[in-house]
Image 1 (cartoon, rainbow, N blue to C red):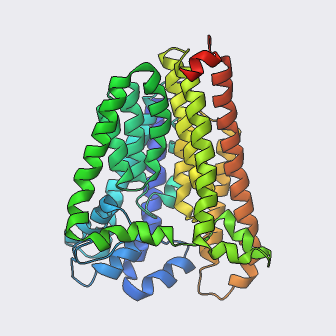
Image 2 (image 1 turned 90 degrees about the horizontal axis):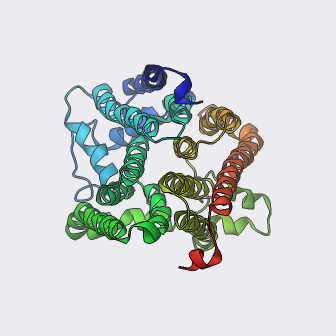
Length: 402
């Protein structure tokens, strides 16, 4: 699990191998575009949102402009990633390959950035079969790369770059915002000018990306926010509410789920911020950097693992978090088994073979197992962060309250 024990080239070769396998499995779906794609993909356990959503929009020859002519349930940058490859000539296979090549580059860049963070464990991302399963399922490797770039920039004293990269990540998927609370807690103690630069860069970048679209097509731009705010429990641990008749209605009650998941995330933010601030007030730069990484990883795991909506490719965020936190090998092994299992259960229940009812119990058990894996990872990270705060030299209540 440590990059110091293996040649650096092996790290990238393994990651590249997983990504090539993923492309080879998924590109087969390009031969079944349009309406036929989803049934074929579910039957063959080879589904990709890239081909599904591209087929819905572009494979007939059109190029509707995202948000202006086409309502998309993703933030602005993912809308652009969906649209731009449609101009590449060559049909569905080229469209998918261009998209996948970009995401593979993001995956390799993510591994490289983890390798440049002292004490991180890039094998968490490079060595996981989740790269093959999920690298081309959705566009998550892009915001993961932006998040890890922001962490690297922060540790090298480039607060403005860190803020800008976090904002770009949030304009693709919201989860890169997980860096903001731990980073703000550390910089408030150690470098308030860097905090101001980072906050300003984040606001300016987010506005530069989003305001033009919001001004030109406000309803379509806001659809991402309205759509997600109104969703009920989907494939997540909250689906267990359906198993109890008295609680089943809560599984479709968006206000309740938003409040419950927000409370869990808020508690994690509070804990991480207090712990990181305590470390920053007493430890050196290396200790503070590690605390920020642990805090970021904790928020990612809690946010993804307790969310009301689950999609299998979210597993990639757990591996990025495990690499940041330098979590132990046994947790890597657990997640490396759970992630593929979750994939096959998810798509077998959606196949056209009519077996969905036979898989209800198995899928529910898979949800519980997946949640347990995330709870164990979150617990390990929280414990490591608490120990760092507790053992920080000179950490006192007076310093904590400063």
